Amino acid sequence: MSDVEEKMKMLGCSRATAQQEIGDTFAERAEAYYKRRPQLLSLIRDLYNSYLTLSDRYIQTVAKTQHHRPPSSQISVIDNDYYDYDDQEEDDDAYTSHIDSDVESSISYQQLPPTLLLAASAATQHDDTMLFDLDSIVTEIVVKNVEYDVLLDEANITERRYKDASRKIELQKSLLEVLESERLILLNENAKLGYTVGALVEENKALASESLFIRRKAGELARCLLKTREDQRVCMLSRKIEDLQGQIYGLEKRNKDYYEQLVKRDQRSFQLVQEEEESCNINKSKINGNQVNLEVCFQIRKISRRLIKRGGNSNGSGKEIGVGKEKKGSSSSLWERVKNMDLFLCGRNQNST
Image (tube, rainbow, N blue to C red):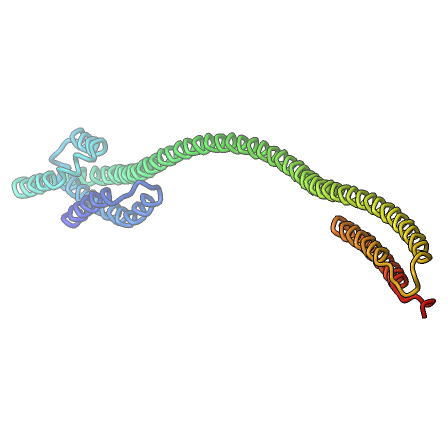
């Protein structure tokens, strides 16, 4: 009994520490239960063995003290033992000591006759069989109670597990609801982002088309600028060409005028020369053979000077090269003619010789 009490105390201490160490999860509780299970089984076996020993001792003491007690009291004791098994286990030691003292006192102070001893022996045998049946019933009840306690403990454990599982399921359901709400929110945001992306894509396409249109317009404007620049250059060149053409036309006109004037001057000079020659020829007939008419020479020189002055004025006022060349040619030809005439007129008279 002392060993059993020590084991019970150890089990209680280990149970207190185990309850502190047991976690909240189902796996931790199951592991703690499987660790405690061999201790519980060994304790149940010890209790069952101690119960058997106590029942044997009780049967022996009842058999010894049967002739001192009436059967009603014995049945009441058995019934009390059957129904109040927990109280009997607590007061077992005191009761057995009391029975032992009663047996010793009855053996020491009383001596029964042999007929009563035979009747008592038959009654004891019958009572032994009844007690054995009751003992077997009590043991079965104890075993059933132990099994019931084990099953109750297992049911409590399973109930706790079920509660934990239900709590976990509820938590998972709440998490699923939260995740579902987040999923719906994300779907809405995704749809909004899809709409915004579509709008941005359309805007990008519009901007791309606008950029292409602007590029085309820029190319056209660049071409127009180039054309305008070319047109400006063409206009400037055309104006310059027109100015040059006007200048050329004016110069040609002036050249024609100068040419006509030179032709007229040549004609006048030729007429003057002819007139002078005629006058010289007339004067020759009047002059002697060895004399020279100086007036005629001076007149010829005056005519040549006039021609030179006119030729110089025409060269200074004329701007074109062709006109100058023509004037120089005409003046040189006239000068040569005058020279020849001067020499001819101022020469010696051949008749004088």
